[in-house]
Image 1 (cartoon, helix red, strand yellow):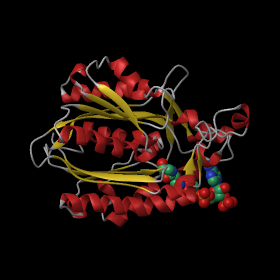
Image 2: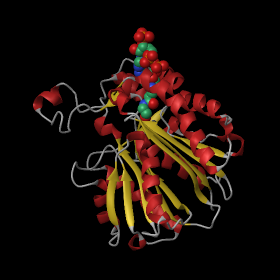
Image 3: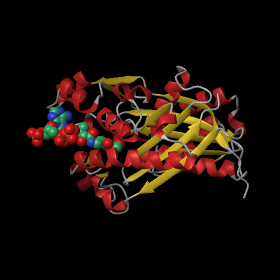
Image 4: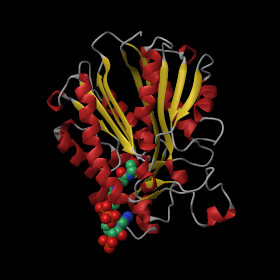
Length: 330
Ligand code: UT7
């Protein structure tokens, strides 16, 4: 089997202009800034406006990633969008992105693995380049979680935000790019984090809307415990596959669900907090978008640079999780 080394050639990110601060949430919910900051680390989040959709965020992030990779949209062979908030149930958001980018030579599809979605999509995209089937794959994590957040529920309304991050994958010199990868899922935990209605089990109806079943329902404590445990396990498996240990990691880029989860997980893996990229304070939990958003920020401000060992770790609804170890190319 062909085994071409695959790496990231460019990154990009985008958040919508509208900001909702904790103080604004204080006015409509029984909560306060101090509680939210102490329990989550989140201070504000960006949300889309009317007429904006997930693909609009994805396209902006994609354009930046293409520019950094020095590629034109027509040079893309494949577009994968990781999202749980598609523009439309049918077709895939990746098809809307393909149209808007005019990426006329690319095939396109979505991957749905909730907050682990970007890592899953990266794994799928990698295999197409690794086997020589495609040369350039655009992988995007994009979400408009504000559209499935119950703004009357203080347990969840404080957590989520909208945004997008993108990377372009391609062949790289040997020794660089993706060196280790781990993915996993445990459907027995599916009830812990879900949107109950809107699928084939409970199609949309007046009753499902009245019962607020189209919003995210989460058992926060359960997810918290799972997250801390699984982040360590999956990161260590990916590192082992890469033949590296935690001391050799330059940057951990975790899913930005909650700063307390991130800190506890980093401690378990054995990575000091000053090597962890955190931006949940500005964007909240943007599900599949959070890892590429944080990654792009750290690449653009030059914290992440050539020869750095970078570990991406995602976890969330499914339950699903995954980690990727990358030797950074540029
Ligand atoms: O993307 C992946 C999926 N999501 C996650 O990873 C989220 C994982 N979970 C979490 O981040 C945390 O569990 C939360 C931030 C959601 C909650 O924090 P917690 O420390 O687990 O709080 P708790 O649920 O144990 O609640 C403690 C108290 C409760 O009051 P009582 O029962 O002790 O009187 C809650 O009712 O805090 C109350 N509470 C709030 N108070 C003020 C819950 N939400 C709020 C709020 N403001 N927004």
